[in-house]
Image 1 (cartoon, helix red, strand yellow):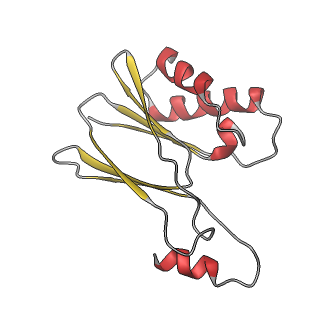
Image 2 (cartoon, one colour; image 1 turned 30 degrees about the vertical axis):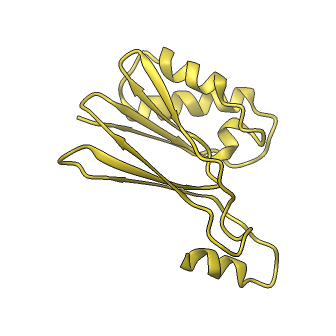
Length: 137
């Protein structure tokens, strides 16, 4: 709420997305906090789950529009978080979900680099691209 108020107080129109992940490493219980952020993806075995919300970025509305989404990670799960530049303005990330499923590695750095390379091939945008992968043990 404080950050939303700060962004709204600027003399120019300004907004930003928020994408946070909080994990209790002893239990695996986690919360995603999303405000205008892209979907995150969780690979568990041979399935990929999308974690998303339909919230506005901070700074757009007077009242904070943020959603908390809960999830419990288990050993072997891989979480991939991205910036919107990876999937483009329309957020069409079906290719990304398929790519995560087909990756032949569980190494977070290799996953991040592979997704970033694919995104650069597919993109016509000049937006920044960030990929962060985490493997839970």
